[in-house]
Length: 196
Image (cartoon, rainbow, N blue to C red; front, side):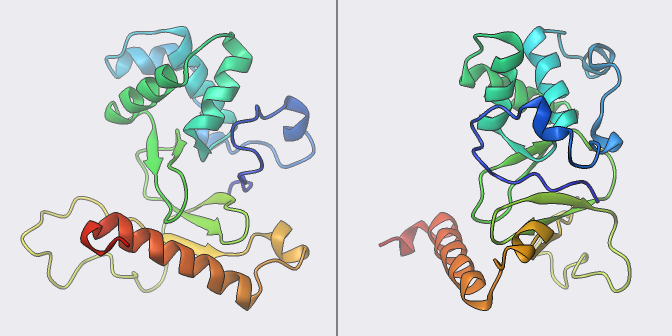
């Protein structure tokens, strides 16, 4: 499992000193030669694209705002829209994966092309990789696909990260409050006619 990357202040650059005390970044997110990978994907090599891949290799599961902030720390003036455009191009090219845990901003990672899942902390939003599910598959094949051609099953585990558990977060009441907020968000997002 990769070290959790929580939402501290998602727009603030992640300082190099912050990554020193914790575990080393997961090498499965590292792209050794971003220039070559961009070319292989048919994308033009630009400084913002290289910087985005570098940031995501060092800080997987970052939001677009966190990526933009860290890219600006590396390159200087780069618009947030330019970073969103780079992320979209990299997702389309298969270099970056976009994950959207319920009730959370979209997060991005460079670990693609394998069957891994995620665990998300209900208290702080920290997200980590979980390798392929073992044991009984949790609904990976639907009983009725309703005519859809299934090409992917996404599994997200929810719980409390070690940091929050140590601080006493993740109590039954705090989990119920988060679930309620997520349910309302899910309901209003997927059923616009039910918005109040």
